[in-house]
Amino acid sequence: MRSISGLLFAAVLIGAILFGPWSFVLLFGLFSVFILREFYQLSSIAGVSPQRWLGLILGGLIFLLTFFQASGYITINLTGIFLASLFLIPAVELFRSKENALENIAVTIFGILYVVYSISLFNFFVFPESPTGTNYDPILLIFLFVLIWAYDSGAYLFGVTFGKHRLFERISPKKSWEGFFGGWFLSIVLALVLHHLFPKFGIGFMVLIASLVTITGTFGDLAESMIKRNLGVKDSGKFLPGHGGLLDRFDSILFASPFVYLLIHFFG
Image (tube, rainbow, N blue to C red; front, side):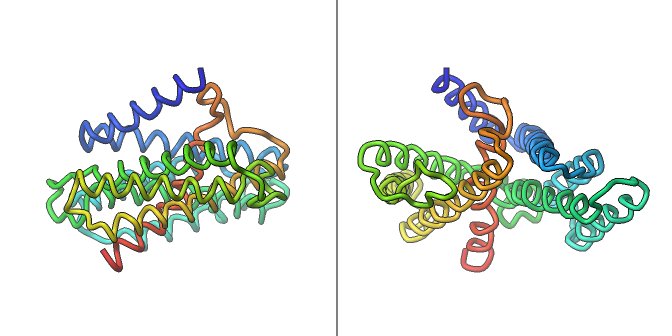
C-alpha cells in the first residue's frame, strides 16, 4: 500500500505539472492551503491558537498572486503587498481574546512563510523570466522533485544497508551519514542523466542543484522531525496511507525551494 500510494502521488504531481499552468496552479494552490492547515493543526497540539482561517486565506491569495506575477499577468512587484498583509495578523489578534498572543501571531506568520512562501517560489521555476505569461516550462520544477526523491530513496537504501554512524541522533535516530552520502551520490548520478537528456542545463549546474537540494532538503527533513518529536507525533497527518501527511512529503522541498531560487536568481 505504501509503494502504491507513493507512486500514485508522484504520478498525479508530475502529471499536473506537465499538463499545463492551470493544472499546476490548481494542484499547488490546494497543496499550499492543505499543508499550511496541517502545520496549524500540529501547532495546536502545543497549545498554540494560530489564526487558521486568516492564515489559510492569506496563504492561498499569496500563492495565486505570485502565480499571476510570475506568469506575467500582473506586472507590478507584489513583495510589499505580501509583507504588508502579514500585519493583519497582529491586528486581528487584538480581537480574539486568546492566551499566548505572541505565540499565536508568530506561528500564524511562520506557517505562511514556511509553507506558502516556499511553494509560491515554484511559480518562478515554471515561469523563468516570463514577461508575457507564454513560456511555461515545468522541467526545472520536475527536476527538483525527482532529485529529492532520488536522494530520499538512496538515503533509505544506503542507510538500511550500511548505516552505522548517526547523522543527527537526537532528532532522527534512524538517519545515518552513510545514508546521507548514499542519497547524495544517487542524486548526483541522476542529475548527470538528466543533463544528458536535457543538455541546455549544464553539467555543473545540475551537480550544484543536486548537491544544494540534498543538503537543504536534509535540513528540511530534520527540522520537521524536530517539530514532530517535540509534539510527540509520528506524522503530520494521514493524507497518504503509509506516508503520513502532505507536510511529511514536502518537508525537504520546502527548505530547498528558497535556496534553489536564490541560486538561480543570482547565478542562473
